[in-house]
Amino acid sequence: MSERIVIAGAGLAGLRAAERLRELGFDGEVVVFGAEPDIAYHRPALSKSLLTGAVSRAQTLLADPLEVDAEWYFDTPVTALSPHRQVVHVDGEELRYDGLIIATGVEPRRMPGAPHGHPRVVVVRTLSDTTALQRALATSAGPVAVIGDGFIGCEVASSLREMDRDVVLIGRSRALLADVLGPDIGDWLTALHTARGVRLELGTTIRRWRPGTTSVGLEFADGRAIDVACVVVAVGSVPAVSWLRGAKLPLDDGVVCGPTCHVLGSDTIVAAGDVARWPNLRYDGTPRRDEHWLNAVEMSRAAAENLLAGPSGSPAYTPVPRYWSEQHGVRIQVAGRPMLGTDTVLLESPVAGTRPITGFVSGGRLVGLIGLDSPAAVLHWTAELARQHPAPSVVPPQRPPEPERPRHHSRAGAGY
Image (cartoon, rainbow, N blue to C red; front, side, top):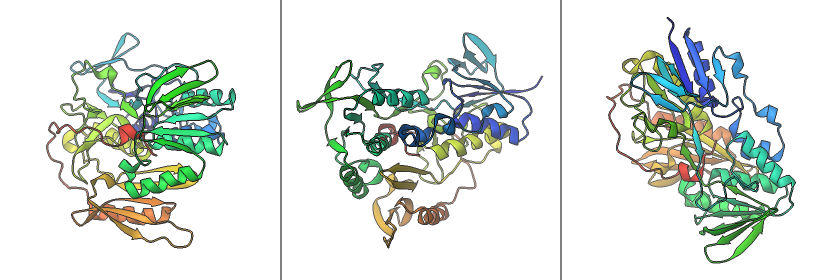
């Protein structure tokens, strides 16, 4: 009887995991279940090029997963897990597995008081979400409110200005993305949005909603009110783990894994992508989630490899984190762990046609960097990051981690 590996999640991480299993010669069954009706697609386009119309829906689709030798079930989420019996529950039926890859990603964080489900109140997480936003924009010429001053909120605001829409960007912070990028770059980004015509309402919250047929009324904490054509809610995300609540797996801001991507306490379950919280031993070893496109690619491949190898024969997954965001024509690139820095240094001064590269240091070592429109320089300094933080040669025993509350990405929304 052949072995069966089940992948929960048919997005980017699920697709790349399935591909890697076949590349490594796994000849058993691979069964992939996805909650969305669509095949895997380029999610970063949702808040940028797909929203503006620069690319079509078809152009966002990745290589057809049906070309990968696996059984694919779309619009069919895994609803529960019984790890002691090695069984997943789907559509009221049970399916046994020999190995399980959890790649269910994240879901939009719900904003208390928001009229979710209203046609003029949308999120931007799926292809259907972006279609709903485009529909709302097409039926009204009024201003658009974006609630949430993280990466997704800022990217949507930038795209809407590119479409010549009036935009009100609402957030709690003093400066855009200052908690992720640091105060100096946060101030610069805030000034950029203002210069490009985005109306900023920072350091405030929404006290009351007044949804209507053709518009939505918003009342700020200080009593001021505005009417807008539609509202984009971009207040972060939460791991998609509700289906795991009864499984007795370690859940703490995601599925808690050891350094090899194996879920703590299991030899037959790994996790990858946005849903996985694991210790990157290249840095301080504190378990974190990385909600970034490249991590979904790299971690899913590592998880597939290590599932086949088993915990004792697996190397630690130790990437140098990298992600990017594009706003008002400027590409912001981040590498490493800038939030671990205790001080900043100027790695490269701006010259004609370039912008500065900011380094974040701790204990005399570079721990992260941020570059603006400087891809070649970022590539160079990312290699230096890897040199200063070599991957450990020995993987320590897996043990339950100390809980850490999310400080940045869950609230801000992911860059890519």
